[in-house]
Length: 213
Image (tube, helix red, strand yellow):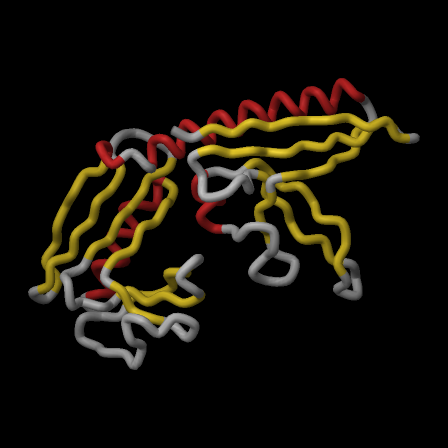
């Protein structure tokens, strides 16, 4: 089960108040449930980051913790500070955050529930491609793609702690990447993704099409 406990504190300022929120999460890989956009000045110097939203399952999977992958991009953090003119507006914001984190936990409970995975297999040029996909009418779904034991066609880069799945190698091609070349890129036979339910069919079709090119 997933849970997020958000603690808040208020500090009076000349213009109103400063709201501080800190999240402590259980069941997640980390507590970075707040999405920020890195602030940059006109001369590309670091500025105050801008709060964007509370994370969804897809945003948790997409954005890194504490530091954006690219300059000026989004990232996740477990604490934020926001100025408000009125205390009542700050308290209303706290309630909205509570509702959003509760929704995040419900959705994460769904996408990580193995009992909700539905399996399907496809044949592509004599190779078996297996999908396991969260069933039901839910906004987010987990998609597990599994190829046969020696079919290293799924391309990754980054590092083992935070691998980034970025492309697919057709069965008709080979690549110089090995299965353990961490740091430069590597190939694997399995990947887990969390995506919007509306994109699952497009994702499946794209994977099958690209494997068979």
